Length: 211
Ligand code: AP5
Image (cartoon, rainbow, N blue to C red):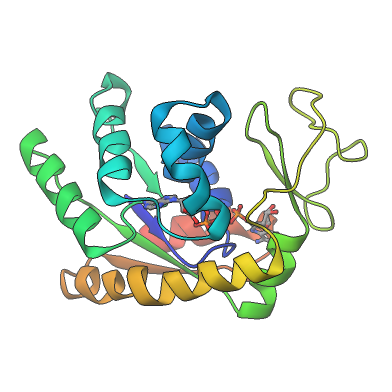
């Protein structure tokens, strides 16, 4: 399953819930790239500037990261791609990878949200730099002030969650990623889910969308 939607629509939050419901791994390209940046790997050094500017990291790097990840055996019972593909070239690469495995895409879950919701979500988002847990200071706050509930690490604000970078990420989404919805829609794969629902209502909405 692919989960698509603009930055901050709540893709990551939904992907984690779906992963728990179905017991399948979530593959988040943004998290994998941030990990490469933090470790200072060759890929991370190239990706860093693109991510800070809110631009797409070059296709060859991202496709390489996904292809490597999809070689692991834990994906055999199914998996969720959060943040990939993000343009036509990546979608073609995914088709090729799945064909080589004799697999087929089941669903594309499209998360929709208003621009005002997105700005609010991203400006109040805090993430754990150690375990990757994601919070919202108002709607999903940590128990202790800006400290991760899972591992006790001080939470941070992502460097691409500044208002001008958020606006650029939204433009990139419209130009590069939104056209994929038409392509997958023509294949009858797309299911819609509102990004405006409260977090407690998401599991039921997911079950309905995929029923
Ligand atoms: P990535 O990390 O994928 O960022 P994104 O797509 O911009 O999406 P976000 O992670 O910002 O938001 P989300 O929709 O997952 O929302 P979340 O659930 O966190 O990519 C970052 C960068 O990496 C890109 O700009 C690019 O440079 C690079 N990159 C990644 N993949 C790439 C690719 N394939 N090709 C090239 N480059 C790539 O929710 C947001 C907040 O809202 C959270 O605080 C959450 O707690 C809160 N929230 C969520 N749902 C609700 C709700 N229902 N009610 C209340 N609060 C909610």
